[in-house]
Image (cartoon, rainbow over all chains, first blue to last red; front, side, top):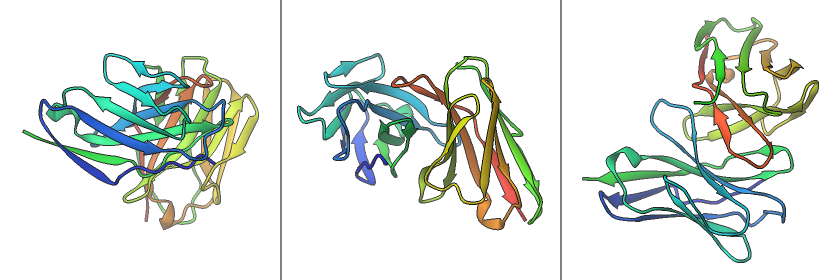
Length: 108
Length: 111
């Protein structure tokens, strides 16, 4: 099973960048790293994923360590709407499992 | 939005009764997953499927069974519901190594 470790919670000020860390020490060479977030009372939604290289999309950036055992999700300018639980995961074979996630609180 | 629909969205049932939750997709994705979410536990994988009639157990499969007779439908059955199965259940679909799309969830209460 995929095992990930994330801080339980983080705080950020609005308009400031946020770096959300994740350790995934059990990752294998072919596992993709995924990040999802879950807003209150909603299902999780995809944020970004990558294999080895850093990735950027309209929502965030993903920085992957050279040994791939950790990654960082970067929100360049946090907004109040970014307050959510953020999950990192990697697919272990056909399985996609999640840890407890990081609850991000954004202060105005 | 990805075409994924869960039904029912809410259900209250009595202890000991069978319950079936349905996940329906219109995306023709190969992988389908069932999760449960409880306060303080995040998302826990119950069962998953990697093709028609190809299913496997996840982290918390005891008390649950699944079936996938068509690409578009993945059914989760609680053979005899217990109060510990009160939870919010999420279905997800994906193509391997790409993003997963989640349904809106089914809130199940077992009384």
